Amino acid sequence: MANLITKTTELAMTVTLSYVRKGDVAVDATCGGGYDTAALARAVGPEGRVYAFDIQKKALIMTESRLRSHGISNVRLIRESFVSMSSHIAENSAAAVVFNLGYLPGGDHSITTTAETTAEGLEAALRTIRPGGIVTVVMYDGHEAGAEEKKMVLEWAEALDQSRYHAAYVSMINQEKNPPEILWITKKGRE
Amino acid sequence: MANLITKTTELAMTVTLSYVRKGDVAVDATCGGGYDTAALARAVGPEGRVYAFDIQKKALIMTESRLRSHGISNVRLIRESFVSMSSHIAENSAAAVVFNLGYLPGGDHSITTTAETTAEGLEAALRTIRPGGIVTVVMYDGHEAGAEEKKMVLEWAEALDQSRYHAAYVSMINQEKNPPEILWITKKGRE
Image 1 (cartoon, rainbow over the protein chains, first blue to last red):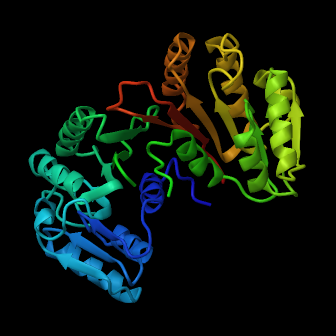
Image 2: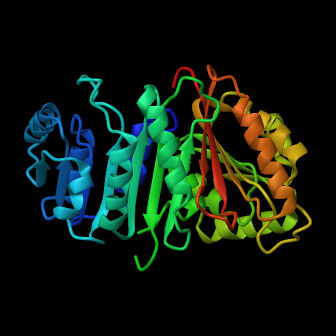
Image 3: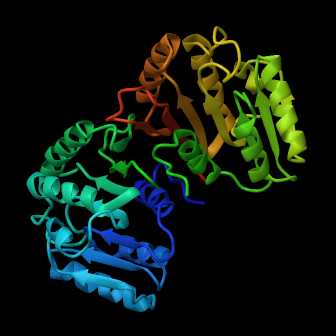
């Protein structure tokens, strides 16, 4: 049995997948090793579609390999930054957009998401989800850029118009070793 | 499809129920209208048991009626404060203990949980859950005592020994109208 409170990425995805139905469009903004891509692809099913972004070739290769080994073929892998998701996916159409900020596990630690591009990507994600959809952000502040990035993300989320968006922040309030934390945002309106 | 981020009590219970298996013991520390009691009772199944506490007769009557209408018979209703759970349930035995702080919906608003008894109840809950179990606290600060109580609960949780407990706090960071928030705590150790 998963202990969701200590397994942050599982908690993030458990909630995310509750927003996804068969036939939906979903987005993995940072496909990394492809775990979330595969989970989203299974959730939307063959009649749905997942768009998976990463700027690193290594991530796309890892993800492609994972998808092939699971017989998953409803994913479009795109070697671009998540900031360009709006040019691939219509506004108000996706059930979920998932971000894992920070660096690629096992990859080059100098290549990380940054506060600047992340802000732009989050704005794109809010446009991309449909009313009743979710943006999920898993934040790692174990590295210096991550701490700065998390601060920016939370300030941005706190300022979101409460009549249009609902932001929930999961903080690990008694842990000093910077475990990952979660931000969920849903778009209000007809669901 | 439930929008879990905006439906705080559903989010709280979705995560809670992922910690509960058939045959388990679970505790509803504040049974209120009996919604959570019934959900826990279904999750532990006929071979499990739920202990449900409330100091208000009205709450127990409402809960008993709900349980009867759902054909649920594995609940022990106890008209005592949750601070006395330790005298009914063995230490390290429960899969989950759930608190809904504040007043009984539709009941006497002058009867609320208070910071003092809540602190005692939370300590009892931590003793009661097994390693790998969860304490779930839904906090309402729409009333004055609730704001004070929430502050106390969070300060208490922040001070929990991180090697023994993991506390996760869900705050609704862009909402000004005091929606309910969640505190989850799990006990570390063999699961």
